Length: 323
Image (cartoon, rainbow, N blue to C red):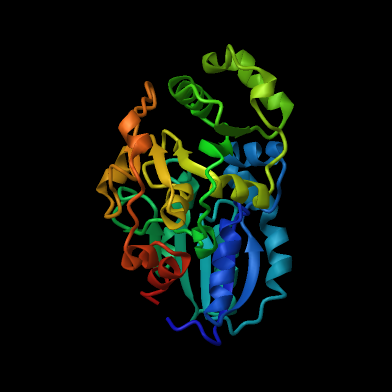
């Protein structure tokens, strides 16, 4: 689909600016974008409630979406949905009633095991894409992307390695072990928790938090500019994917675009065309050891073809290619 002059209804959660990168790419290619938020709230309690009671939350949010649909003209051409966790079948059908000629595209950047409620609406989409290879035959595999702005390089490696992310699953344990293994003061670790009560709950409910200190965590999200600054000043970026996911995180692709070295627990990265040992080191999440020769090796730059494919523009072109 040629996007110039097209009207696109874009439904996506707010997620570390990746939703904004897609919106910018849509506008850059000439589309007029009408934005709706999937999961239109930011509190940790509301997000936790949504994960547990997704279908109930969808019913409660229908009115919110109906009011916003009134502001969308009937002559839109494309509905692009990312995840669609809180968008009910009723809302999608309302969009189809407004324009049954529009094409509907779904992209999920999570495992379908974590977003089982999305399965209820799959038949409403003309095309479906996933960042995981094994989300079923209804999905086409398409890895995530990086936004070209992160490709600006810095020769000033203030940090040997860094990690910035939410302290979900076993991330605290993995980062702790990497920190002990490297034993360097030139590391930057930013483990984010949504609230202090989450920390205290983990302390009493999870064995991996038994020795955790509240000072190990941050309770305010790091600003985008600060995160970008740390990113550019790091020689090696650490990536720890959710144990329930196999697809590559956006962080992995950002590292690719920025010309940084990567340490990751995601073994599936070996199956991608950009895997090179000198650039990427796969570690065991139970016993993450980083070889000294990997740290000392120089980064080997990637071809423009690979960088173009994994850019947000390359991602968008493929996702809308079928429609």
